[in-house]
Image 1 (cartoon, rainbow, N blue to C red):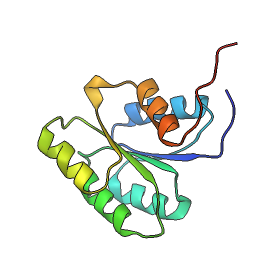
Image 2 (spheres, rainbow, N blue to C red; image 1 turned 180 degrees about the vertical axis):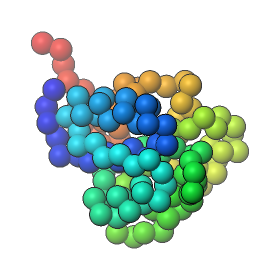
Image 3 (tube, rainbow, N blue to C red; image 1 turned 90 degrees about the vertical axis):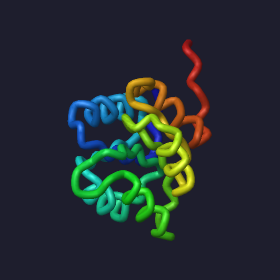
Image 4 (cartoon, rainbow, N blue to C red; image 1 turned 120 degrees about the vertical axis):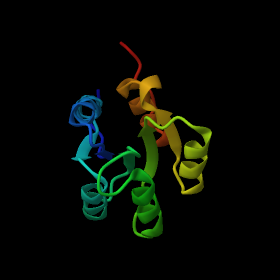
Length: 131
């Protein structure tokens, strides 16, 4: 595992799931940042300018669609955005993509390992070979 300087912001209101992603990202050499809701996530995104944002849709105060719209409207933020949501309907996926999401995963169908591998692929980080 090599260290990289990529910042990955996890915006997720389920603290247990957020911690799973934080640990997996950290273990894979990323610099993980976490926010428990959309408002906190937006503030952190503006301050830290993460390379990738893992974003939940169903959250209190400000849902993921609002967060996604705000991030895409902020021209100083150029983050890759991956939605990880319980919403599995095609209309939600289409809405997220129309708002600028780079990828969409359904929580029940994906593991943190799969998501982190997608992050690596979107950042063009080569897979490490087992020695």
